[in-house]
Image 1 (cartoon, rainbow, N blue to C red):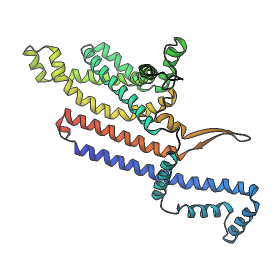
Image 2: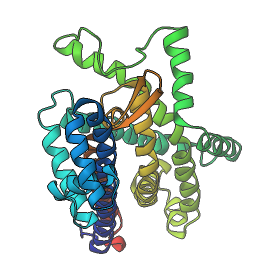
Image 3: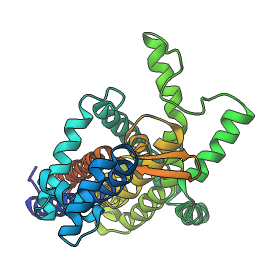
Length: 343
């Protein structure tokens, strides 16, 4: 196997650009959060420490500034935020990791494992189903046209809508599957725990598979049709080689090249859908943690306020970008194994 260096370098360059965007955004957020903190602190000081507030007001007046602006400038000076936005972003990211360490409820390692488990299970099921079904319907034009219609239909349907439909059927109506969570409470022990987790993962995995599998089936079926028109396949058929051998010896390898490319194209879309479904089913993966970075609170006389938790949001975006880079790189390596021309 040759390593596809050009593809790897391209992916790494994209990854670095994404990290730069995340760091810059974190720096801008750090500055905005400091300004918000200054505004809130000045309001609080007016009532809790009027003497100190008057001192701030006096110093601010001397410099022809508002109290908030004066306090904000002193705040960023003390915290070392009066630097360029990238350095501010690095400072916020470093502070975020330090703040996350003592929080026992935030289990990043576990969330990553859950995310990878659900995504990889879904991808394997999609690929296996698409190869099995796609090869069979490649010789049935009417059925293939119907599957293409399904692919177009589900391509425009939000994954959460399918999830709601599955919950209504399998949870509310028939009550045969759990609605949410990764395991039952209290959790079972031993082999029972493994089966319980698998039972809880059926609906989220089935939703992802049901949304994306149709496009993969169409790709496999169309590629199978194209391969059967190639001269070398016609020659093998003329020699009397059984169709089963032709499928698995020749066609599957060539389909694998196209399928790996298509998987790479659809992976980001699949990942995004997973984040939504993770929050919907409360799987305790990266999606639920990402949702937790925006906390909704009801404040008396104000209403509903959404608070942003940057110490959770920005590390998660870096983890998600890293996962996408690693899995995309693995897909490129698989393409290199199947087709040396990629290398």
